[in-house]
Structure formats: structure tokens, C-alpha cells
Amino acid sequence: MSSPAIQAQAVHKWFGQLHVLRGVSLDVAAGEKVVVLGPSGSGKSTFIRCLNGLEAYEEGRVLIAGADLKGPKKEAEAARRKTGMVFQAFNLFPHLTVLENCTLAPIWVRKVPRKQAEEEAMALLERVRIAEQARKHPAQLSGGQQQRAAIARALAMQPEIMLFDEPTSSLDPEMVGEVLQVMTELALGGMTMVVVTHEMGFARQVADRVAFMDAGEIVEIAPPEQFFTAPQQARTREFLSKIL
Amino acid sequence: MSAAMRPPPRRTALQWARTNLFATPLDAGLTVILSLGAAWLAWSLIDWAVLQATFTGESRSACKGSGACWALVTARWPQLFTGFYPEGHRWRVAAATLLLLMAAAPFAMRHAKAWTYLLAPAGIVLAFMVMGGAHVLPGVPSEYWGGVFLNLLIGVTGAIFALPIGVLLALGRRSNLPIVKALSVGFIEIVRGVPLITLLFMASVMLPLFMPTGVTLSRLMRALVVITLFEAAYMAEGVRGGLQATPDGQREAAKALGLGPVRTTLLVVLPQALRIAIPALVNSFIGLFKDTTLVFVIGLLEVTGVARQALADYAWQGKDVEAFAFIAAVFWVVCFAMSRFAAALERAPKVKPVQEPA
Ligand SMILES: Nc1ncnc2c1ncn2[C@@H]1O[C@H](COP(=O)(O)OP(=O)(O)OP(=O)(O)O)[C@@H](O)[C@H]1O
Ligand SMILES: [Mg+2]
Picture 1 (spheres, rainbow over the protein chains, first blue to last red):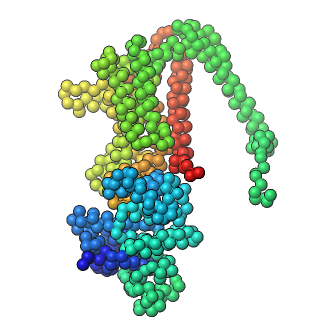
Picture 2: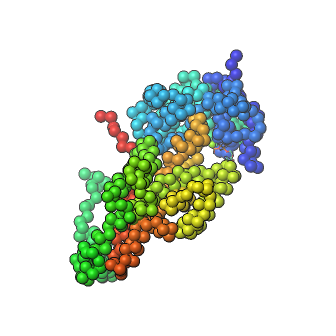
């Protein structure tokens, strides 16, 4: 029996005096999709960034496919490699073309020959439907295209788990759909996903479980049906009443 | 055709002049007075520099007219451009100049391939070999090199070697290692707080003390070391500005992709930071090139040194204005060219032109 894709155990995180994560635990099975909701400042970004080592945590454990993020260097590196991340602000490399964005890490980190890296990248760009933009620079693309390029870039490292931090929050409304579409297809393909988002439609449709974070804790976690129709916690109900 | 689609009305030159130059009586008066003044200045300058000037002659006595005495420049031009390099070998100075320009070329191009930057140090080393002889050509010690060529040599060499050092200093200044950071900050602040001329003086005395016994550094080498380090300190600040202006999201995205700190810096951060730093870097390049005239204080015969020697000669006494006007013109041409190149680089689209599929 293989270990879960993600095991976060009682993770605590401080920014100076500020106790931002107060014992967050979450297991995500391989192939599972978890959507994380919560008010601004509740620690959603901090938590998801702890899952790929962008943010250091002070207490607790995070295992990615059984490998400890704070383990020996090799193990930690292996754990980190298993995740890909998509940011709210895309963070594409502006000095490189879309194709080069997608081949940089494969060439330098996975040591794939350039030609093969380009073929793989083109296949991914095809998959997110921007193959015809491959030779352009990010600034020449629309927001939705940029975010799809960023998804392709993350996928090019062949991660087992994809982390999304509000991937559609900085998009014009008419572009949200195309990005969610790509994410939905990715989910259908069996990818393990943790998604911080305010898109309730996506949460209902795609998530296996929805987690509600508030003040640095996971207050409630449940399958979407139950989460949206019969929330158990008062804080969850209050939050849902505000956003629905 | 709707109003929104109509092209903006074309403005004629006359209309432009009316709104910008003659809008009010005061404007009109100022325009007239200033144009008359400018025309008079331009005329006097042309009259002095061209119409009444003397262009050839063996000494100042050839200059009879009331205009400029360019005979000084034409009589001494080999020295002004090449110093006291042996006459039969001046082609080597021309060849070395071409090598220097080649070394600098990748920095003036919009989309130079990464490997072309390696031509820079190679071009410089070759230029030194051509000039010095490298045991193939007859040897010419650096004491004989001079003139505008020497300014160019020191300027280009200083700039090209200062850039990587400046980048390292800028990275050092942002380092998390306290010692690296302290050393970088200390070096930058000390060097930037001291006049170049004092460093040149000190180097001519102190650098030899640090050398192992038996090794002597030519005056040219001492000047190069000092100017390179001086320039590096200035460039470091320009590069630091670029590093600060590169968003953190770039580093995070690189880290999330598994790129380590070194690759993140080289492949993601620096290319963006250097582009942002172009104006600051060019500014310091231009400053550096003009500063090369200071090396005369340690006895190198760069172009102002050659001019001083000529002026000390009885034949040319009193022709300082012409000598320095000529030098000013040479420097202006080079510096203006640099600033135009830089403007073109900055204006270049951040992206290569895209070929749309037909
Ligand atoms: N680098 C930092 N230094 C100090 N405090 C931080 C830092 N990053 C986040 N915080 C604080 O940590 C808390 C949690 O922030 P986080 O970004 O994780 O919230 P979030 O749930 O993602 O909010 P949002 O919905 O606005 O993105 C906030 O109070 C925030 O101000
Ligand atoms: Mg956030």
C-alpha cells in the first residue's frame, strides 16, 4: 500500500510573533482533489506554500509521497520535486518565450535534452490549448493564456501533485472559464490537486473534499455535497453565508 | 464614418509653430530672441572652427587667420590617436581597436546569444597581444601605447571586467551570509566614497607592495586594476537596483520548479535585473570612459597627456583651446554613441519579434 500523496501533520508556522498556522493536519490521497476555502489572511497561501518548501514551518511534519520535506537533503529534494505550483500572479519568466518557460526547468533540473524537452513542452501547450503561442513572450498573452502557460510549465516537471494558489483570482471574468476548464481536465486525468480558490462551482464539481481554513486552522473538511449543504461548524456556516 | 473612427486631424508645421512658439506675444518675443541668439552662436562657431581656421602646418606660426588652429591636430594626429607607438607598426593599433570594438559589440546588440559575451574577454586579450607583440610580433612595451587608443583600451577593458565583478558585489550585498555581505558593502562604500584620482595615486605606490617579489606590474596594469575595481563598485549599485526591481514571485516560481539558488540567479533573476539596470550601467560606462583621462596622473600618455606634451612644445604653445576642443569632440562622439545604443536597447521590445504563422 503506497503512502498518501500528502501528509501534513500538526504544522505550525510563525511569522515573527504572528502564529499563522496553528496545527494544520491534512492527508491527501493519490489522485484526490482538495479545495481549500477561507477568509483572507486565514493562512491558505502559507499552508499550501509549506507543502512545497516555499515557506518553512517551525513545527510538525510534511510528507510528500512518504518523503519528509525536512528530511535529509536528498529526501527533501525528492519530496519537493513531486509538486508543481501555480500562482495567483502567474510568475512566468518575462524574458523567455512561453516554450522556453516550459523547457527551462526540464533542461536544467531534469536534464532532458533540449529537443525532447521542447517536444514534451509542445505537447503540454497543446493540452492547455496555447500551442500557437509557444514562440511568444508572456507579455504578449492574455491573462488566461498566461495562466495556462504557467500550468503547462509546472506540468513539464512531471509532478505527481499540483498546488494551485488562487489561480483565477487575478483574471478578468471572461478568462476564468478557460483556466478552470484546463484544471478540470487535469483533475479528470487523475492528478492529485490542492486548490485554494473562491470558485465555488469548481469546488462543487471537481473537489473530492473541501477544507475550510480560518485563523490558521482547518475548521472543517468534508465532501462538497455535505460541506455546502450541511456544514457542521458555526464558523463554516458564517463564511458560507457571506460568499454564497 | 463615426467620429471615433475618424483619424486625428493632421497638424501642419505652421499650426505646430503657432501653438508652441507664438502662442502669446511674450512667447513670440522669446522665440525670436532665442533663435537669433542661437543663430549668432552657431555662425560664430562655424566661422571660427571652419571658415577662418587653418588646417595644416608645421607649427603655430602657420596659423595666420583669426580662426582655429587645427594644424596642431593634423600635425600630431598619430600621437593623439596612438601615442608613441612605433610608426611602422601603427596598423597594430588599428587592429587592436577593431578587436576592442568587437569585444564590446555583444553589449550593444539587442538579442546577442549568450556565448557571444565570451568574445569580450577574448577580444581584449587578443588586443593586448597584438599591441604587445606576444613574442610573435616585435615587442612594444605598454609605455609606448597612448592617445585615444589608450583611453579606449582602458575604458573597454575596465567596463568588461568590471561588469562581472559588479554583479558579484551586488549579489554579495544581498547575500544572507553576514561576512560576504559586510565585505561587499564595505568595498562598495569605501571605493565609491573616494576620488578615482587618489586611488590611482595610491595604486601606483601600493599595488607593487602586494606583489610577490620579482613581479612588477606595468603602470598600465595598475591603472587597469584600479579603474576596473572602481567601476565595479559603481556598477554593483546599478545591478542591485535591478535585482531589487525583479519581483520575488520570479524567485519563488524558479524554486517551485526545482531550480537551485545558483541557477535561479543565473537563468531567471540576472537576465531580468541586468535589463532593468541598463540605464544605470550605461551611465557609469560613460562616466568611466571620461575618467580614463585621469590616468595621466600616473604617467600614462592617454589623449589629454599627449595633448599636454604637444602644448608644452614651443611650436604649439597657446593652442590649448584647439587641443581640448578636439578631445572634447572625440569623447562626445563616443559617449553620445553609447547613450544612443543604450536608448535603443531600452526601447527594444522585451521580446523578440514574433513570426505569426501564415
Ligand atoms: N512573508 C510574510 N511575513 C509576515 N507575515 C506574513 C507573510 N506572509 C503572510 N503573512 C501573514 O500571514 C497570515 C496568513 O497569510 P496568507 O497569505 O497565508 O493568507 P491567505 O489565507 O492566503 O489570504 P488571502 O486570501 O488574502 O490570500 C496573514 O495575516 C498575513 O498577513
Ligand atoms: Mg493567499
